[in-house]
Length: 162
Image 1 (cartoon, rainbow, N blue to C red):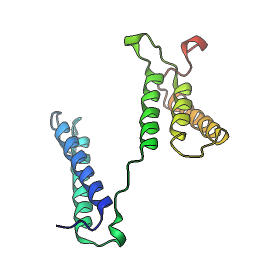
Image 2: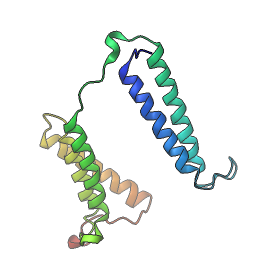
Image 3: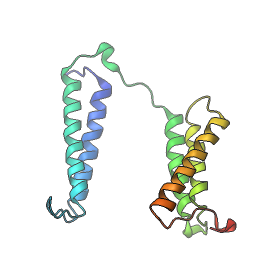
Image 4: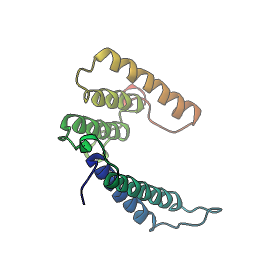
């Protein structure tokens, strides 16, 4: 068996594994039926669709020829580090870490941190463009979640009035 497209093959495998994990995890919740869905219904369906999609992509990678085999290159460590770090920082800033006494810094600070840290994954990022993007995202998030959806979120750090 020879791979005709490495990227599609490994992407398909990743989709299949994630689909099986989601479907297996969903099986521990009540599934219900289409007219009365339980909490496990959507994750189960999503897992099945994801596994099927992965199967199709993997099959395509084994059957259809691509120019040069579309080889997988080296790991992109910089984007991996900054994107994962941005998500961790967002979670910590939004919810705080009560176990070490770190309070929530609020939605606005979390959005700004997320945007700036994630932007550093791109070589040649600029402060001005990132600041504008962060401002638009913070305003949009505040309008959407706090004003429209009436979510009870900490918007500002407690030292600024929460």
